[in-house]
Image 1 (cartoon, chains in turn yellow, blue):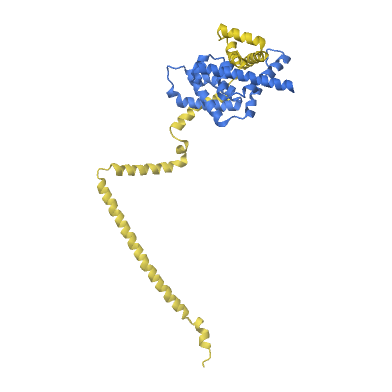
Image 2 (tube, each protein chain N blue to C red; image 1 turned 180 degrees about the horizontal axis):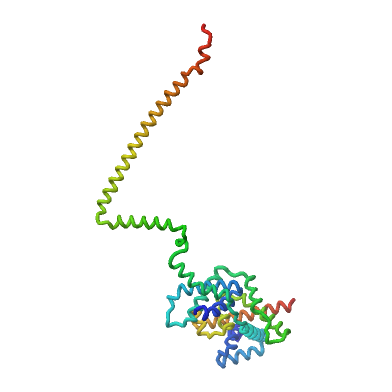
Length: 170
Length: 167
């Protein structure tokens, strides 16, 4: 067997997992190959060294954090913290009123009557706005007339016409 | 109860894999958070420790692939782990420490999957059947990974030894 094949058998050789035949082949090879023999020594040393790494204790701080984890999860599962803040309460109250009104409308037995009433109110509102707009238009027009009259009156005032009167007559 | 019974196992696996104490603490918290979120999926007929370690192993390898922990943080492992062996004298202890350091440096050169197999087999001393269950791999694949890992480790150590003698 060549070195490559023997190298593959070194780890099972350490673990005593080879057949008698394979074991003899490895041992025969190791007697004549210093390279593979060195690899076996290093493999054993590394295995021994790794096995001697001790277990490390968990710090008290980490244990506390781990115990706090399920509580964190419960909080996340139900209500986010922001919704429980006092400053959020007026918004929650407004949202509740809105939801009540919407549900009142959505589940009312005479919803069509409510629709008609809303429509009437809406049209009444629109016509009122139109009327106000028209009144505002006529008011603007009146204001314009006042402005023109005022300008004419100011230009006809004596202080502005004084120089014209003093001009010599030809 | 879960914390008392399993935090040490999970933390040590994370620490041996990541090589950084702080990183291992964060990873342990992540793993326990995942555990709380997926405990409903646990099949009561299965071995709970193996199931939890599978969850831990998947998280550790995923995180490693995503972030590729820096070598710098992995070196910190030496400070905590390579402490003097109280059972031996100072001279012997220094030799053991040096040898551990060389092995740990070589160990860091292995791929994440092979490192995990070596941790479970050679550091934690688990049976191949347990490792196969944790890594969700056939028994033959696990043995092959362990064998390959040990051989790679020996070759890296041989190379390091050669470089040291050559200098």
